[in-house]
Image 1 (cartoon, rainbow, N blue to C red):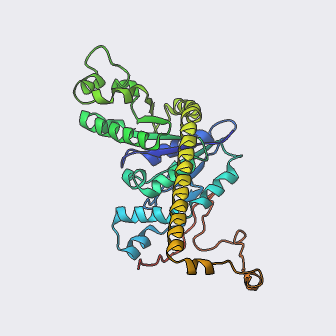
Image 2: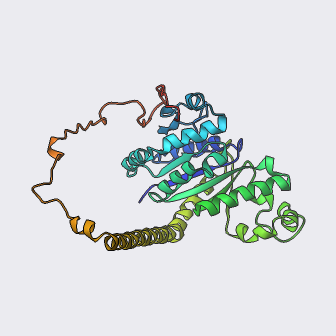
Image 3: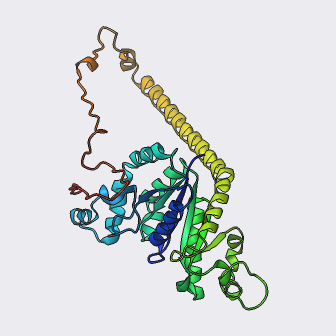
Length: 337
C-alpha cells in the first residue's frame, strides 16, 4: 500500500510545526515504530522541532536570495520556493525510493499561508505529490484565537478556499479544544457558538460544513492524535474514490485539448503552404528534401561527457537528512538580467 501524504496548512502562529512534531512523536511511539518521511518547505524558519528528511534550507539560502534579488521577507519565501520547485522531480525520486519503507509522508509548508497555497510553486508541488501519493490536507486552527465569530469565519473561509483549490480530502484540526466544544456539529438546541454564527454569517457555507471532517487535538498533551489518524485513514478512501477519478478526467481533457491545438496548428500550416505554393509555383517546384548522400550526420563527431553525481555531493543537490540538518552551502543566485 502506498504511503499517505499529509499536507498541513494554517495561518501564522497556529502551531503547525508543533503539530507536526506531535504527530511525528506519535508515529515513533507506535509498536512497531512508524517513522514518517518529513519535508520542510519553510525556507525562513530558524528552528523546527523535528528532524526533516528533506529540508529546503539545505538547498536554498533564504537570506542570500533576499540579498541577491533585493526582496522582502515574503518575496524571499516565494523566490526560494520557486527555485526549489525547479528541481522538485529530484525530491519525488527521493520520496519514491523510501515509499516501500514508510507509511506516512509529512509536508510542512511555510507559515505564510498565501506564499504556498496561492503561489504557482505551491500549486506545482501540491499537484505533483497528489498525483503520486494519496494526499490529505490538514488545516490547523488555533482554537483560543477563534472565539470571536469574525475570526472563526475567517479561518473557515481560508479552509474553504484551500479545499476547493486543491480538491483533496480535507481535515480540520482544532488545536487545544475539542470540535464539539465549538458547537460545530450542533445545529439545534440552545445558543451554541455555531448556532449564533450560522444565524448571522455562515448560512451560505452550510453545505461546506456538512461534508467537513473536524478533529480536536492537542499538540501539548497528544489528546486526539489517534482520532486524527483515524480520520486520515478514512480520507485515503475518499482520495481513491473522488480525487483520482477527477485527476484522470483532467488528464484526459488536457490531452484532448493539446491534441486539438496540435491538429489546428497542422491544418493552418498546410493551408499556408498551399497558398504559398499557389502564389510561387516555381519556388514550390524547387522544394525538395536533401538526398541521402547530401545528409551530413555530425552526431558521431560530438562527444558528450555525462557526469554521474550520485556518489558524491555537489552544490545545490537535495540532501536526504536522516539524523540532523547539516550546514547549507552558500549558493550565489544570479541577478536577473
